[in-house]
Amino acid sequence: MAALPDFPPAKYLWNASHPDVPLYCFLRMRREPVFRIRAIRASGKACELMIEHGSSIKTLTERCHVLLERDERWILRARLSG
Image 1 (cartoon, rainbow, N blue to C red):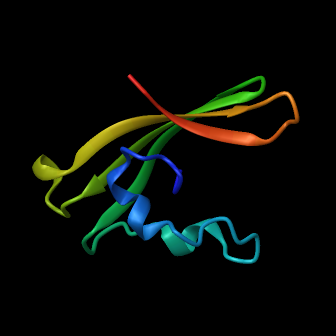
Image 2 (tube, rainbow, N blue to C red; image 1 turned 45 degrees about the vertical axis):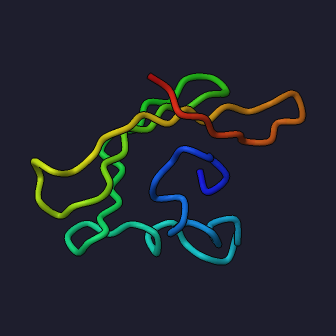
């Protein structure tokens, strides 16, 4: 997700590719800037995430959908969907 050009929280995920850093280190549930994974739907070689980010005030939080898909070499790639 850090490589997505139009994904506002990408600047906070710059080191997310390090396998020794657990995912929970990137989640901020209450303090700004928040980054929450609200839903995960997996099927086959794809996974869709609904993410909330931005303000800690619920009505100002932005939502987006990110699709994670495996390519022909089985490498996980991310793209914004819908």
